[in-house]
Image (cartoon, rainbow, N blue to C red):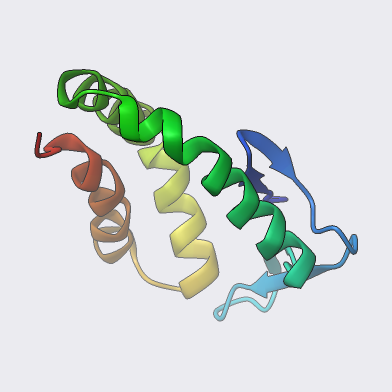
Length: 113
């Protein structure tokens, strides 16, 4: 599985094109390949966040709740994939990997206004 970063709402490889492999500790097989982010990627991400901040700041709590709930729903739909990836990257069995997959949607599910 090849992963990407999301910068400014877009899937992004590392600016350098470099990647790194995460290996399954049980089999030694490549579990995932991810961008090897560097300083240029950090700057792009910080610049994108800074550009988005005024609009997010002007967004009311009700609309933020809707957006975060939508994000939680999307993450929840991805739970089986997250579990498979966590199992492959860490060698943890399904129950431990399921706990890893449970926290991202939970972070978005109860936004405080």
